[in-house]
Image (tube, rainbow, N blue to C red; front, top):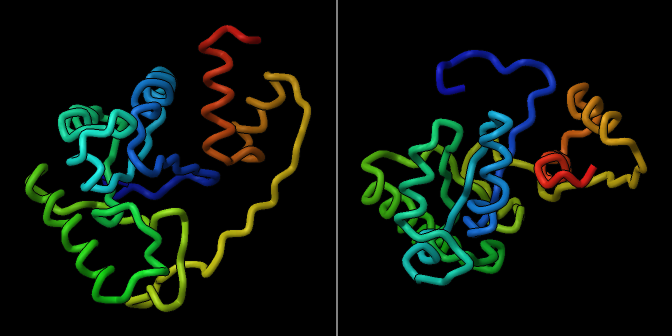
Length: 174
């Protein structure tokens, strides 16, 4: 994408919402080992706040240096946007954009609605998104090799499932 190339069929985008330290400590080493790119979406107020559960600005700056990582923004406060007014949402988004520019000296490449929420009231232009996400979750009992075959074929697309499979291999739990 960064080079303007078309995506191959069955491409999967892996994203993490919230910039949890667990992403940095658990998922990132597995994805780096597998050479799989991913995006981390963060709320700037949490990076400011110093909570041990969320990445700091230093951790986000270090993470951004990794060639496999892209950072994206959430509103500055990690809130349910559907419960805010249009003016409140604009303030939260503008604050997040300003903080990204201040920290990284560039415009943020991506924005995500927190909690995967979206409503028609939040749509500001054509392209918008879906009003709700529908997940068709199926529980399967498979061998590891069959599961990885399904990842490669595109039958398994869920990022959490893929990361779990990589973690199982990395921890030697097979």
